[in-house]
Every structure is written in structure tokens, then in C-alpha cells.
Length: 155
Image 1 (tube, rainbow, N blue to C red):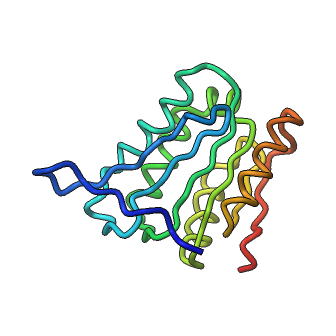
Image 2 (tube, one colour):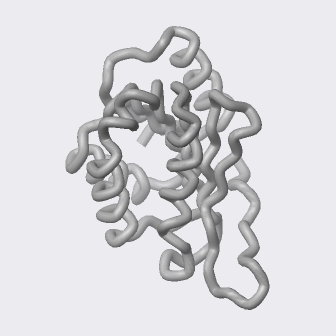
Image 3 (cartoon, rainbow, N blue to C red):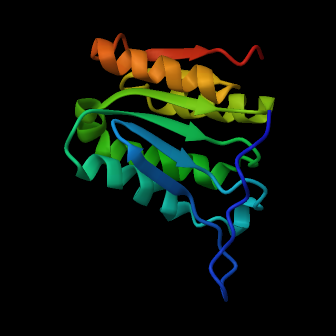
């Protein structure tokens, strides 16, 4: 399984940014900058990516690709704070959320986030992108399901 390609920062900066692909909407793919050290990642770019999808004011599903990245506490805390500030919109518009993981450290981070902020929709962890996309599109077609977390990573 190959992680997503490394995101190259703009010339003259030391920051890497998350990318949001809305070309397959209602499937939104948010890719973390694989291979970048946590301190070089523009954390706010993650929330900008999520905000782009929420701004459409339409129900959607999100695939968050974290493969090839290293988790850190500051990002985790910021994610929980952002979620709490946007919880009503997320609950209304996000039908399902899948996370692509490639490490047990990520599983622990995700568990910590979900402990601090209960998932607003069906949430599932995967190691294969095809499986994650198929599940998300099925959830969208069904209109969602029961909120909760399932770890399909085998870890």
C-alpha cells in the first residue's frame, strides 16, 4: 500500500498543507502532507479543507488520508477544538467519515480524538483506500447510519 504523494510546499516557505479534493463531491478527500514533520505542517490548512466542504451546505462524506504522516498532540487538540466549534454543521452535513491509517500510533490518536469528541456520524478507520471509498459511497446512498467508530485496520 503506497501512501499519497508528498505535498511540496510553495517556494520560499517551510510549511506543508493539507489538500481537499472536491472533484468527486459528495465524496470529499482530504489528504495530509505525507512525509512532512508535524512541526512543518500548516495545521490550519486541515480546517480550511473541511470548511470548503461545509461551505457547500450539502450533505457529503469525507475520506481523510493520514497515511505517511506522524500524529502529534497539538494537532489532535486543535482538531477537537475545531470540531466542537463546528459541531452543529458537521452533524447536519457530514453523512460519514473514513480515515486511512497506516500506523498503530494513528489508531491511538484517533481513539483519543473520538474519546474527547464523540463522532457525529458513522466513522470508520481503514488501511485500503478502495474499501474506504466504497463504504463512504454506500453510506451516502443510504443517507448515513448510526454514529460511532469502527476500526477496520486490523490493529
